Length: 160
Image (cartoon, rainbow, N blue to C red; front, side, top):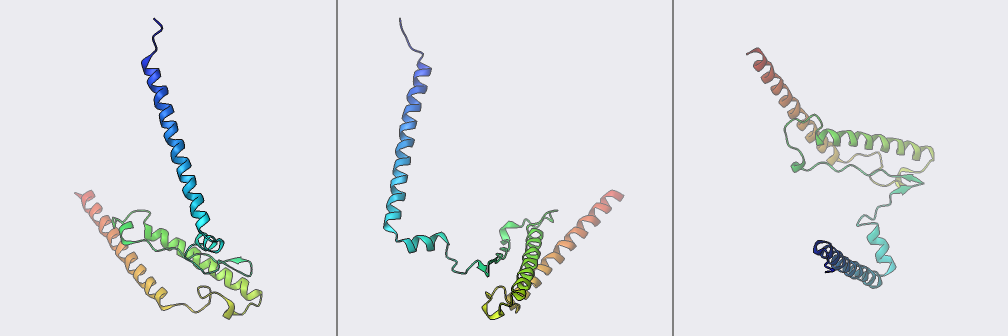
């Protein structure tokens, strides 16, 4: 009698309803974005795009590398992983230091006085960096001790 497959009809209705709801959400979001841009001045937009950091990222055409962020306490599981977040941090810190040395030599070659360099590029090292190295060295020592302890346990279990 000209009946319809109700499953297909339900799917069509569902798709049109979902499609209409999504289109409504998209138009609301785009309207909100337009309103936000109209409310801001061009200077506030450019400053928000660059973030809270007002430090220039280049000097004499050279890009100043960003210092790696140390891992937080919650990121390390303290199980002596083969690839520890502190090991990865140490590798990125070494790469950062090498790039800073290369940047310093390039700036020196261009005869740019050190007084014009950004603070984080200058040759004087802050005391906080030395303190941080001490903390990192202590952590590495603890990791070595844990590794040795695991190896001793494994050797004792292998003998038994």
